[in-house]
Image (tube, rainbow, N blue to C red):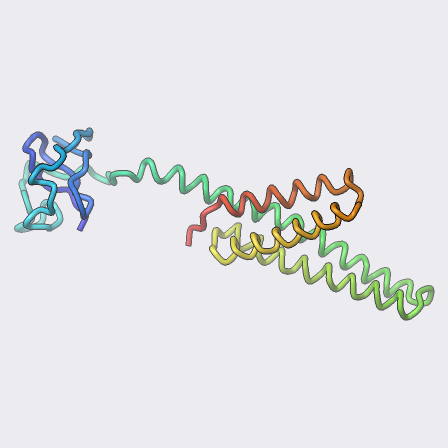
Amino acid sequence: MSQWAADPYQRFELRYYDGTRWTEHVSTGGAQSTDAPVAGDRFSQQPLAVAPFGSPGGFGASPAASAPMGYQPYASLAQPARRAASGKLIAAGVLTILQAALCLISGLWLLSVANGEAEFLDDLSGGAFTIIALVFVAIGATLLTGGIGCCRSTNWGRILVIVLQSILLALMLLGFARGGNSSGALLPLAYCATALGLAIAGKPAR
């Protein structure tokens, strides 16, 4: 059990025990500082009486000694990194949502073309337009779902975006390898690679 307790080294009022060892986080009179414990000292083990500091019968309970209010060791270091990782995931979600909007608009436009120009298209051409349009709409809807999941910092959204962006990136690289328009493919490649990298580097909040 992690807790603040009376410093077993008797150098400060309080020392933080993280559940496995005494840490360097100490406090006297509410002033926080660090003091490295002695390696191999007999106090490296868990205190005999583990209870929240200041509770009745708690280890080292003393009216004069109180744990620093709101202080959590390591939290100040972990929180910025966690926020940065979550920000990367949200950025991946925003990029993916923009992709989804483009796919949905393209799909709906192709559907309108297939319906509006039906008298000028034979059955094969009209069917091909419709199938392509439905594929764009399906891809756009899936990208939108993953993008929203990433913006909400969920693990399922992150996984979905990683899978989708990987597939899109692989298809574009395949087209590029088969002699596609290299200059026109660079921007979509960079876009997918950026969204994929952000999703991989991002960490979900839940």
